[in-house]
Length: 331
Ligand code: TRP
Picture (spheres, rainbow, N blue to C red):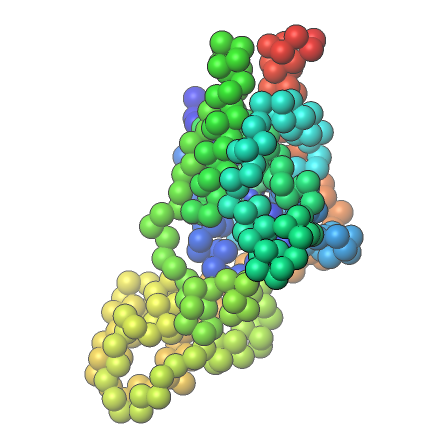
């Protein structure tokens, strides 16, 4: 039997090429060897997104994005968290085994408290219970599906460790393997994707290239990448150039060495390097963009794909909740 890989995708904004190389591609790669269960964490997003139109649009965008990038819903169980009511029953069950002190130590919560203190605000200002108990809901997402591995970025490792703690507390209390203890699969060797300003590409730096930007916008953004003031004739070092580092993600090995050679020879300006970058980025993204636009234009079709995923997911989830109830004496 294949091992189970599960991850949650928080629908909080437009996907960019940092997400593509940092999360989407590695997770789709993992899905080839594992029994994969990937879902849209819409109730996690609710903690922050209170505008229904925005949330609805984000959910569809992120679902269409993963499908357009190659997620095959026949191979991966792909669903919305909110379609699995068992998630919320298991969350309540896990609450009884989660130390409040454990939640006090969560990075995201601590950062929010710290930010309040720095502003001389009340330490709890703007912090809802959804944020405070975020790791419990996430633990439920994970153990509900008997997950072996959870592909996540480094920022989520603490949450996986909390899921382990909580699952172990349940198993220790009932002296049985009620819940499977998951492992984090940290997406380690992915390249850091540089943003338009040279820092890591991130929504919070506002330096992203959206994955499905129209061709014209894509071109405009590539042309906006910050460069130094080296003249056209000067030889240039590929490894320290954002343009080249981005190029590497999209170009074949031959293309990479050809462009590196041109950099080192001198005579190629940044404008020309950007044209070359745009060409390879657009070559990879334009078929995806076409699929994305078709998916977004058919919300009913999209909903159907996710509903079918939920149908496959629910019996698995129900079995876990039943196991817990039986162990706990609530049967
Ligand atoms: N917390 C994750 C994030 O911010 C999203 C998420 C929710 C998740 N539930 C999960 C990830 C379960 C892995 C497993 O990106």
